Image (cartoon, each protein chain N blue to C red):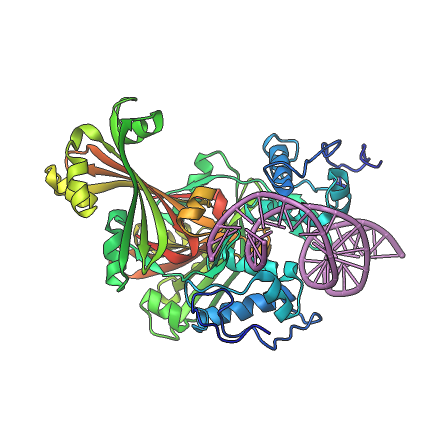
Length: 258
Length: 258
DNA sequence: CAGTGGTCTAGACCACATG
DNA sequence: ATGTGGTCTAGACCACTGG
């Protein structure tokens, strides 16, 4: 009986609930699904807060009166839907699912979230210059090998990462990119500083896929979790393509509206 | 040894491959993933055609030298990505994944596919009149309880279902719906017959989710497979809302382009 | 009826992260 | 060194489907 209070609030297993449960094997719904429903209810009701850690699988399985495999079936489903994350050797954690509304203009991402009252965060992974590879060149209508700028960021809402952004720009049109960007981490600022006040969306593509290991780590997901993939092109008033953006979004936390 | 030829080509286990395989447990990639890669390669290379049935899990697991659970881990991943379907009490089958391109105007679905050289199919599940519930009424700007027409269809490409469509129309504007629709199963025809030559897309929404049991059955998927959910509104030239369409698409088989 | 996939048990070893 | 999640084994019973 080590369920009761701990002195360190961040310790593992520091969670209410999970006591005196009975799951009947002969019911019409599988046990793993009953456990799924149960844990999901704990999350939705606020008993399990975002960031908190679940008890270890072995203890939890014992407490719920099922095998570890059966418990894992439930946890797996919850991970696929983005409610939980697991880190090998560490534990299973609760993720919140901000439901973000995104308007047509993908670059207005931050505004859409702020309108919902979310605290928007930006983590810049890298910002570098390099020659355009054939794909970048084709998307931006450049010659292969032309100088390009690559920017990769993770955007988060209320502390939960929800979006990986990878953007490519034609370096010739934006000589002062790094200087301006470093001030406020704003691409819009960079455009304005180079005289580009207005730009338009040429094309947006939305497809589906599954998180790679790297994407999963950045978004605090389990690899293989389903995601949205977006790809969009922006052009300035003269029709010059000035940005090719690709995004990777948690499937269950976004609505795209056009 | 019952692997060799059968007289009936549609029989279970009637599949080449799956012989003399060795999967090393101490490799850097898990066994289930090696099996996943192996089966996926068989599908991609055409050794496993769409619609063909895999050997039973027990036999297949034995042939691959792994436990049924390990095999099922690989099959599960393939099902989630839409490459396989399983029917309880029947077997596991190969699904092909037509990659359909869909343009902004969702009603042009069939045209997009035909342009790819696919054979487009339509299965009408129901077509009925009923009073609009609050949600329908709100989307179509009707009074609650106003007469509405509901149409539910499954669209397929090359015999594989890829899209469930549920549409709602204001019945008052389309008195001859059933008569016209029955001729060619075309909603566009119905609009034209009622003097609506042109209509415009008011809004499109794209979100993600997981297939319900009913959706899974209609799309020949496993319940819980990730899907796109679309919701769109069309209005006629005067701005009257004439159609509210909802769609459920296999995640891995569509690209939305705007 | 026989065969299928869906579920579940009771163990075990490993790689990994943390203290 | 300990505890974690990730993987794997060798069985078992069930509900469902088809002939």
